[in-house]
Length: 138
Image (cartoon, rainbow, N blue to C red; front, side, top):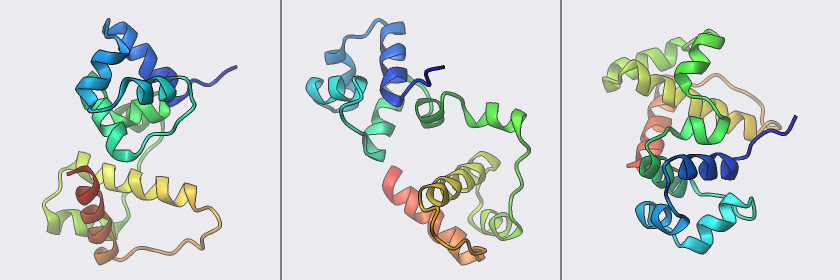
């Protein structure tokens, strides 16, 4: 079984929307050549470019990265929000969806840094992570 890549998903959505590479690249603020390289799995996307494409085609980053959305993941596996994140979310007045986004970002970071010793995050650590996500994604 071949697992679709981010580039494969972008191409599929673009074609479903009947957009040319040039049209999507323009909407996302990218060059046509760069988008072509992404769709052909020759280049990786920064988080900013990934967000630009997701917004341009009206899908989520979750879908582009994993092939399903956070809502679909919720129905598959129960999500446990650490008490420290819950407190930080309350203090920051975050919605449930925003809280899940912070949790998913933290899990993604940990997955990429698998050699790192896992430690329990404090309320301030969660707040700092939320701020870093806002800084990157606006």
